[in-house]
Image 1 (cartoon, rainbow, N blue to C red):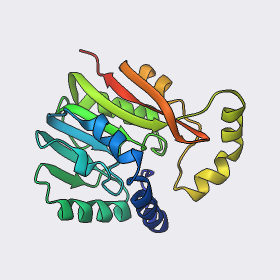
Image 2 (image 1 turned 45 degrees about the horizontal axis):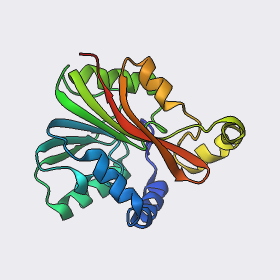
Image 3 (image 1 turned 90 degrees about the vertical axis):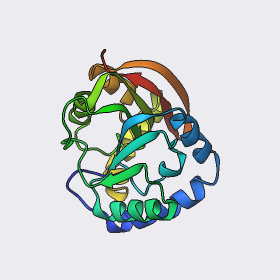
Length: 206
């Protein structure tokens, strides 16, 4: 989870440590199901420490971007350990993707839209670089309903300061629709007991 233009050395270290625990459980299986069947040219926004890398099918040619140089170093180390020749990691922000229009067959965002500095701009960039009808595979924590959402909003300033700008209370499904994506599959669960999560597939306009 990274914010454009900022580096977070200590958060990157904490996130890497936390991931070692969470990825041993159901999160790894969730990532694997989310990414299965991908093929062709794929862009991943916010690669973080590279948690998705081992779950990409070999048929997918992946360019994974990450703006935070400390996260990027960890992602590069993860990639080197895996030896996955079909994945390339580059430094770039989600809001300004350095690729021509219609460059990719599919896109992946996992636990990153909570932290990008400009969600509409990031999604507009994804639409631009996706080919018509291209898939967007997503897995994001979102604002809860009712009292839970109000509590998330109340603690957001402190949470964002501690977690490299992460937002607890973003309405990601609404943002995807506003950006012109069609949500074709949505599953709801909980990343933590107090943190709802949505995952699924959206499509760029044909």
